[in-house]
Image (cartoon, rainbow, N blue to C red; front, side):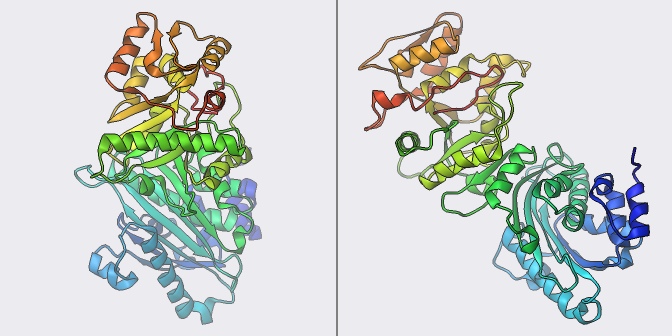
Amino acid sequence: MTRQGDGLKEFRSTGVLTMTNAQKLDTHHKALTLNLAASTFGSFAEIGAGQEVARWFLVVGGASGTVAKTISAYDKEVSDDLYGSGSRYVSKQRLEAMLDKEWAELQTQLGNTRGLQNRFFSFADTVEARNYAGTNDPHGWMGLRFQLQPGGPPNDVVLHMNLREPANALQREAIGILGVNLIFAAFYQSQTKESFLGGLAEDVVRERVEIDFVEFRGPAFSGWDHQTLLAHLVRAGLAEAVWFSAKGVAVPPGEALHKKAVVLAPGYFGHVDAAHAQIHIQLLAAGIQELRKELGEAVAAPIGIFSLTAASSRPGAPKPEIPDLLRRIRTLLTRGGDVLLFRERELYAMTGLVNRYTKAPLRFVAGLSLMIRAFVDPYGNLEGSRLEALARLFAQNVRVYAYPMAAMDLKEWIQSNSVTGWEWSEANGLVSANQLRHRAPLGHLYAYLLSSNFFVSIDTPAGLTIETQSGLDRTPIPTNGPQPRTS
């Protein structure tokens, strides 16, 4: 078995750190390895949460071999003087201004003396950690500009992080680990996107730090597709959700959702033909129109988003592969629809994510069968079972707009999924949420949700006929939480 220090001993003797041994190093040894690498030299600029990354390099030993400068511009006037005013302090714009300035100074000050033998790097972060009152949204931007060879072209990594630890001290600790991971991965784990993101996430992901946006630039990342990287963040568990914009403007989900009224159209969206794509667009448009009527004209128009999941359709089933996810996402994007890709499949998990960034109304719009799934699933993963799931789903100004379904399709779906206890009437061959009933005692809960407008029956838009209703939802019911599918 390879011991923790074996890779470092090999590096000292040979100057080469192999991938196998690189993966064995903890944060201390990653920082020490970089300090002992005579060819790596750079600067650190950190705003907002202290010099948590630079601290590692200064305390592990050998910092004079790596650290050219550390700076922490806490005061806003000082920060503006260094990096320019006119942007938010915790923003991608401010981070890139920091990288530009620190990189230019590094080249000017050390290019002639060290430029032929050193691989330069400039590290920067701007972070809002938990405040004393605990009332803010802890998050930040982190970036690195670096060379793989002395005098070589620069490469950039920029990422957005959400700090999930409950205490300020723990958040600062996580920032330090993530920053060391980033620098180490850039120099020693950039062979593939999987190895890079795996190294980046060591010891900090999910429970400590969520990475919901990443951008790579430069020849070191030639061929790395941005949409593929975003999907990988979710599928690998690094992010709870990532945002895909039909306009091509890449931002973290929090920026897209900030204080917005939102309509989510959850689904599988497996069909890529024009007819089904039009159905999906009409479905989302109807949901936006319904919420617009609720809010009135004086309120800003809600945004409509298609939502997919990277989770498996049922326990034990494989997760969808990234090419399959991207095929469905890109079909929606080409039709003008924005997309959120979620890590979890349950609708209440989607509610939780959106409610982190907005207190405005959230509405789901979906085919009738998806509503049935969300209602009848046993939710064995929750202590409170179905009641807890519904409480989480409708936690904060949330409703489900339920689309009608062709009676023949509903009957076929009920039978094929072995769902029992449902009865309905129909009008013109369609069944609406108001025409659907369940036998007691569960029927009492359904009737309550319907009469209380947690479930809202809406009309089919013009052009959506009985023949096309089957495009809305014909997929199996999962056994552990609703898999959101509408085609």
